[in-house]
Length: 330
Picture (tube, one colour):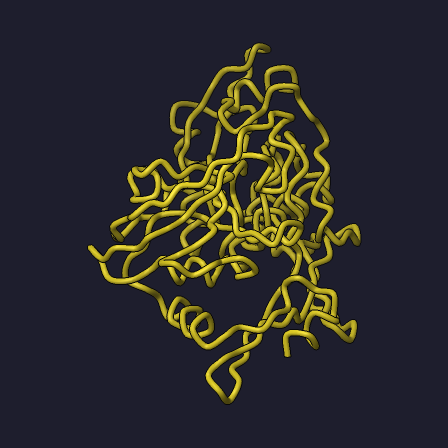
């Protein structure tokens, strides 16, 4: 089966041995506790990479950082595993222990690390699982050098609560007077709940604007369009992105970029534009098969390509503030 699937040339289509399939289905039903990381599979390196460690979570407390590669979980190699399988293996009962081996440095995440090579290291960590609350949307404001008031919304991931959180965030930054522009920070946002990327795009697009199209193996197209209900369509929008912006975050960013509704600022995004289905086999194992791809309003397939920003400032690394990123733009 592995040979047959590998002949398809799709790194996201794969055979799942019984233990990995069981872990994945348990994860889909919802585990009780984890280590507090956002993960993304990099098909270029066949590794699962930590994109963010939740503040206050077990992983962050142990020193796990964005860019670390998950090499093993409880003695089992994660080479070739999907991000969902790795996440499932890390989950369990609150208070339970999980042993994680990480690798760091030497471009292991497949990026150029902003041109800074670091020595490769391997570390084995024993973490205690805990119930970790996903970081909510954070809001703030700053005054640009040109005197404009800019509202900033930091969106760490997309979930079923993201739309309501962004609406509340927009209301919050306008509480002490109208803002001249809004910056939505998607750096390090690996996506998450795909429908949320579509719904958030609707908040900023006029009626009937195209958001994304889902194209299956036989070319059938399912389109997603804006309804314009309650949308903010006049306020200037800036989207901050980087090499770890992926999936649902890319759907949102591409929709606003293609509709000329936002200026995309930062560095090229990750490029994840495929949808997988997971099917069980009779022996308890399973297969994950790509069933469709995403196409942006302008017909772009972002997979393996990513989004090229409209503006690429010299200083807009993940540790830089939105003010720094937009210093010469707003």
